[in-house]
Length: 451
Image (cartoon, rainbow, N blue to C red; front, side, top):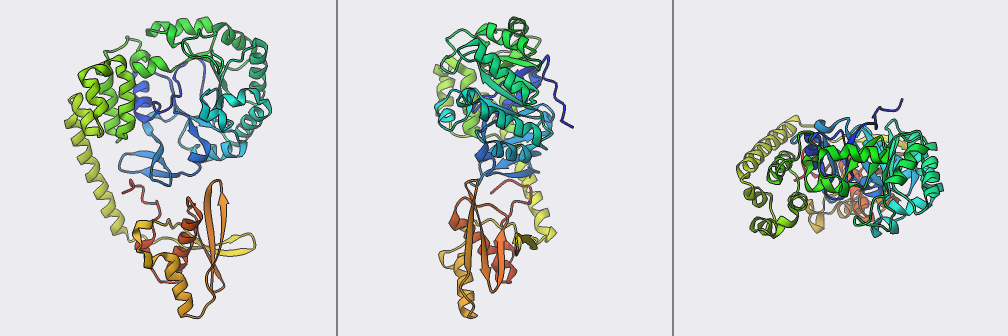
């Protein structure tokens, strides 16, 4: 049974690169948005992430090999957050849906982004004329997950081509189509093709979400006017929400300083990166970036510096102290639990392999004590054959199995290169042989931020 998200009669925060992170999504919901889309996240980057339950912040974080947070969500947006993915591959799209299906309300496929990065990668607007691939991706997602699937497109130059594309997309079983009323070559200075959106809305039987009308929307009442003009079921806002997120308020927009302060409150609460916070505030300031405060923001590098500009340094300091205390308490609890890593014997094909999660962290070892070095020295000392490594590439990540004294060992953690994969396999072997203790085994099971 597909999870239920009603895409009719909704006002929605559009997917926006660098803007659609957790603080902005929460701010949009606070002001009255019904659904919020994440920024576009590329499939292969998400697939390199680990899902971490961050007990300090009360969030779920998807963290890559470099300990960068790729996607963060929390209970406050549950049931209303739509993850937009950039993909050109049905299998990868399905893998992403499976990875995040407990943490998002729906999946949207970007089929309209005109930027060079997306098009060169076969994603975004590159898909608009690749109907076989569009059908394959959307059909695979609809058939493989209970999450509701949507996609976001741009109109094509010819009306009949837009209508045909809409019908094809509808046939895959998606729940709605987001439509930006410009072609991939057109930019904001070009008029939105509202009549094309209306024709498509009349041509299909699923909700159409109209986008591209920011030039026509200056206040809350204009949102409904735009919906009626396009005949759409719902409206998605991008540039107007980026510059003043209180466009979602029925009571009217707030002064921009009030909006920035409320945005910073969410950024502080969820420990948002300073670079991302700075970028979002810059978009809100617009021409005010030339003011003294705007120039000071441009020069800022730390969250403390940004917060000082809006007299929120005390809130930031207080929150950081609370987070540090909570993290310390959780570390002490983890240290006192004496939990040991779990080593299990598993069947992989015809082979029996001893496995556990063991991430190789380079700065934990001196050159002379690297896991592979210790392991080969042990085999030499005991007159065993040298360790033999078999390494496989898995979606730009690597996993290795090492054969030592007729037994095989492997880490379930996918490493970023072949060398690290072999080191992590050696780590498992050393632990199984009793040559190292758990202090050298770094898995990400504690649910705490990375140090």
